[in-house]
Image 1: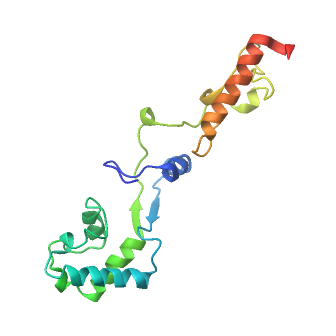
Image 2: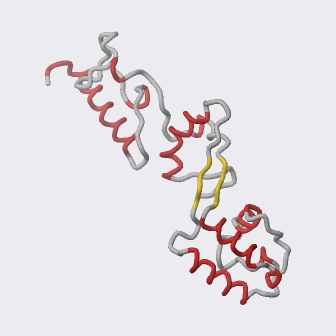
Image 3: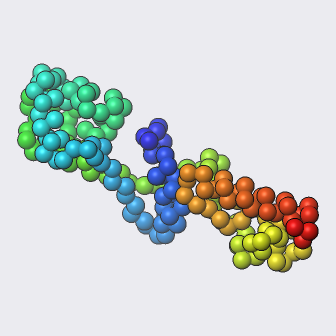
Length: 183
């Protein structure tokens, strides 16, 4: 999903852990390539553009792409294709149209930063799992101390896995903290 601050959504959330590690390296160059028209081949997309350009031939480029993209995305795509948004469509060259097709199927964005940790859905890090018994979630270092959820160094892909890890470790820790080895 495109937002006012950049990209988000399940794929971005799943990539954020790896991207965070890469961003901590000196001078990272991290890019994301997006195909805005994955169902179309380059040839079909070009024909689609030609059809729209014929339909809106007297309009400016920025106003003639409304059937192709969401309105807020149009200026970004035009800018990435290095085209003039005010140029009349009937003056767009084949080379410019091909550049536009390329950007639509190879939109490349540079990752600059992650969102602040205060907005995190899942965080990575915490106490090493090696320091806890997986059967009881009791600390191997401090008797009577139990760990669960994001206190532990455990994170997973989006889709409920992090919640499941939190619920499962929380349940095991609570049952053993309350009942000890009775079970």
